Length: 313
Image (tube, rainbow, N blue to C red; front, side):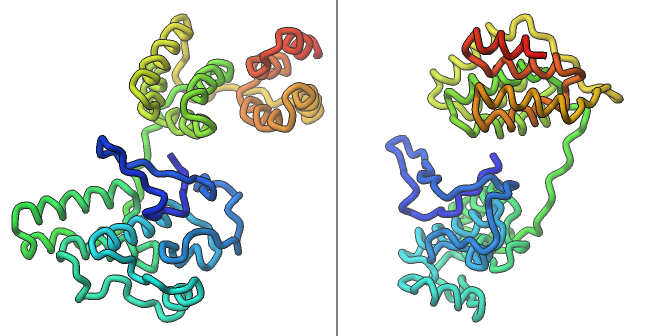
């Protein structure tokens, strides 16, 4: 979902009675592409922090993969690789000594040692490129061990080179009006929280219909009853909606800065600072000031305020 947790450790993992693992405490998480991750800002738990975290650099999914590798190592051996070390000592070992976190004599079965070593590579470019790649390597390692062929299987688990995801075809996308997307996002947000905005944005990259968009979002909603309620609500509210596919050369008339500023000021008086985000999202698809106001009005709950906002042009 594009969120980097930055503090994956056993204390933040909850194993439910059904065997499902839940990740908790997103207090220092950040959206991967966000500028909120500032240089020089060190956050995390020392024994599970990646070298780039200690250096205060930007983080991405490979930071959490590093921590997941530490958790895997601890799960199998009883202690993290640098157990008992202070933050300063851990930092020196990772950044100066560049200690081998998974030595050849580590008490791990060969295939799992390879997985842990790849996940905890000091150079993030050498780690698994995604959580799914690490999961696949773990599945192969466990399958090899279960079959009793640990030595033969070991050759299967060499660290894969990071592979960039294949570009998604542009023809698989749809274009929906801002009001329709806002309706879908609000319904999803009631069930998954602020992450709904990011999920909608990502789902739009591959969805070719409103139904497909809602199905993609529903996959993130738990429990099943809430998921079904979301899909039923969307089916009812979007029954008459028609969304044209993206076409080459869609014409968008740019609005003047003075007109945008006026609309933004009017909306800020009603919704507060968040209005700036809404205006930025909707402005690109608006041909006129009236179009933009109509799209933004969907976010105003009070009928009188909505009417006054629409009339002010």
